[in-house]
Length: 153
Image 1 (cartoon, rainbow, N blue to C red):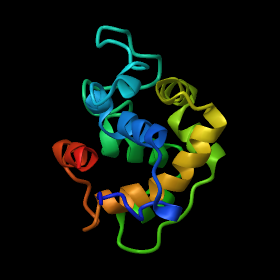
Image 2: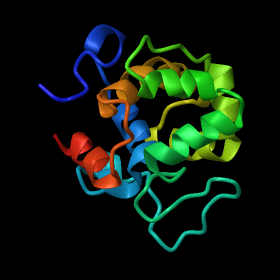
Image 3: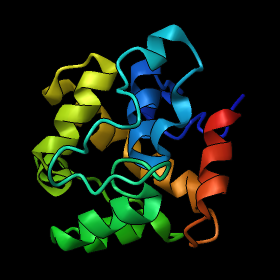
Image 4: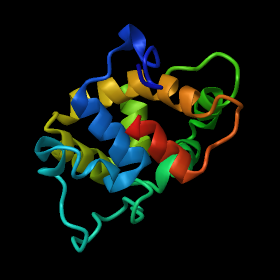
């Protein structure tokens, strides 16, 4: 049983959703885990799509902190803060999440997972509140290596 059991409604995180979460939160960490996971990822020298703010191993948006910053910048700070805090997690609608992440990030993750963009946003909007909540049990954003180790368990 992993850290993310019961983090999403139904307690079921599919492999494509784990790839999507890994792309957002820990970057290329998932490459090499299996041919299926590694195949859609581009080699390191590939230029970053415009507007994705990718870091070498911090996810497409610079890890969990970058994801939360994108949500705050898009006017969803109260929602993002509810996921980190110890109270009730507020939902985010798929369209709002897509606007906050930006089309280049959504397109990149959809390509990595093989999911269409609408399904990706639907699943991410359902999963992210619980995942971020599980990654921040004390209301603190963990270090990158702590987030990465959560995906390795």
